[in-house]
Amino acid sequence: MRAMVLEKPGPVEQAPLILDEVTLPLPRAGEVRVHVRCCALCHTDLHTVEGDLPLPRLPLIPGHQIVGLVDAIGEGVRTLKEGDRVGIPWLYSTDGQCDYCRRGLENLCDHAQFTGYHVDGGYAEYTVVHEDYAYPIPKVFSDQNAAPLLCAGIIGYRSYRLSNIRPGERLGLYGFGASAHLVLQLAHHQGCEVFVFTRSQAHRDLATRLGAAWVGSAEDTPPHPLDGSIIFAPAGSLVPPALRVLRKAGTLALAGITMSPIPQMDYSLLYHERVIRSVANSTREDCRDFLDLAAAVPLHTEVQVFELAQANHALQALKRSEITGAGVLRITN
Ligand SMILES: [Zn+2]
Ligand SMILES: [Zn+2]
Image (cartoon, protein in one colour):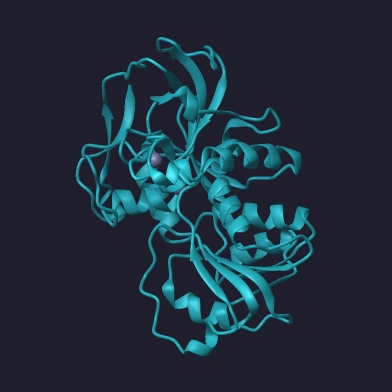
């Protein structure tokens, strides 16, 4: 099968992913093989390809927002059959036994494995997954519109939940890429006013079109203090200005897997019971709940489509914030 393979991480400008022919994977007991239709891009792919994250194995096929059709079934699979359309997200497996799993925090599992990181992912024509970690895709979404829901959407949803924002409140979003454009719609659906902080004019235009109450830069002061905020951009320098416009007892959620250092700041920015918290991965329950909600709204995903062989080019565009909405690799038609 064709795949974009990472043999040695490096700056995306140097095109570290190589188009190659690799062995077709076979599903083991409990697993299904998925014929991949498309795979959306995530900032984590960029951090993987560039080696910002320690890589557990090489060579590696990245990609963890996969939509495809089940085309082979391993022994004992009960919930899926050939031809089913499924999505595969970042959470590939958990041990089900550690203290975090037992406390309902399988997103923090001590032995979690992640798609396109510990195991080969979706920048390929086929991939395999355990049936318990693949999810039926609601019919209302096309393949390409569904793919960004699987990480941008789910992580956005978990960040939104952990920001403690309630219906009708004011939510701030810092950075306006794939995740934020979905959270905006979700928050809007729940009667929240959304304030978007981004420099990019294209991103501001999209935010306005999707119903943002206000758009500006991180240094700007919105007309009202915010009840909760989420930082999607991997920039620690956004933390102090975000706290400055957050009301007392408000929560600032940090959605990224990495972030540049958070500058030293005055305690008064945090005082009055403001909360800063990070968001890490997601649970299977997040995934199921979010896909139901996404179909009920229904969320509109703005996508920019690239061919599989253009993956390096697509990641370069992501790095430069040149993608409006979410980038998606088309793999089979
Ligand atoms: Zn565990
Ligand atoms: Zn991701």
